Image 1: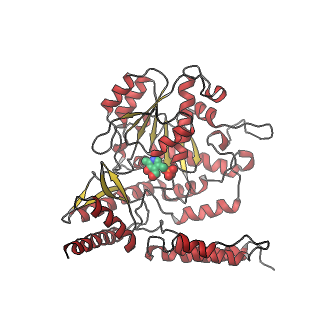
Image 2: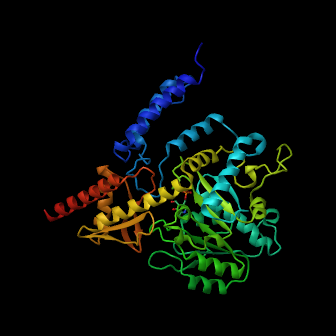
Image 3: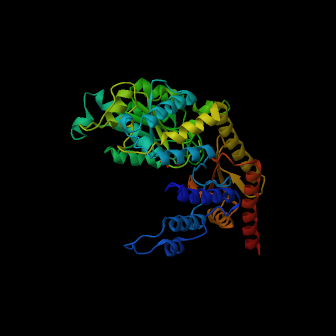
Length: 467
Ligand SMILES: Cc1ncc(COP(=O)(O)O)c(C=O)c1O
């Protein structure tokens, strides 16, 4: 029997993928080829006749090895980027194989049911109001966009204005309040939503980047129209949580919509040891999070959760005569996400949650936080190294010789050296190294090796300077 047309090419891709994954933990963590080298290897005129599929896959695999950052490496600590659990990748392959248009139930009953179950599990894991709805989007940016679209609808509806029908021209002004430390994706969502960023009212933060509830109270006292408050569970630099219970009580008493950006911090709710950081988060109206960060599913995967299903649906739904939308209990994803046609993004989330169980997610969160503490302790023991934040979760901010140039040079040196990868940031006007432990596979040994590499680079710079 001749092989099925997919088999040889998929077999080839599997061999390349296995090779990549087997070698990833040991390889130089940064990319090894630059822009020009990648262009030289990959670019050619689009000929009338194409190349053989196998040759194309071989070419891609050869350049993936050089041009891809090993962000799945257990020693990748850049930005806030998770790796991929084996089961998550396998489930993602299945989702790609099924090639479902997961926009409505009629085009994929399978995806619809899987997303329903995954949403139910997430509400349970995060202990959020069980009647909330969840949409599976590309990441926390689109999760916040979705939640804030629902918020825009909800707060204006309460003032008698239907923004979906009548737009924003002539609408009551919507005030949006966020902390001075809110993530840039909140500003971007406000841009997308026509609410603008200039009018954003900023609430002061404390030394760890937490919103000051007393200042929020003052800011809200001066506002009386439709209002949205954006709080944060997990500052991208320090990992600090806004005082969510106090903020929730203030926002609720004022009738404001409270949105929480919990891109990675919402996962603290899955851990008995870290849950208290997010105490009161259930008082919010909407929550944005990522699965491609801490749950370690492949990119791209975020989740928008909204307490008020009617506002969520009103802001997102699409209806057209040719669509077959369900009238019963079946989920049509178009009701909960901005996309129309979309991939079955919930499948790897379902598979990973089902495989880990509640204990597995808790253990994942605890393990990453323990590794962050371990790295912070190893670095702090060195003369001239200062940890700038309280390491409350998985984020560590480090400064060297209390000097911007030295700190940036250590970051660049570590990236070049290749044992681990991390990035820099500016914290309260000071250059800092940012370490984010978000990968399921980071072991104690990986943390120790990485700290040793960082200190090696720092000591090397010192002896160069001394020489
Ligand atoms: C606190 C916070 N919010 C939002 C985002 C944006 O998430 P995404 O890149 O998945 O859109 C990030 C990403 O690091 C984040 O840390």
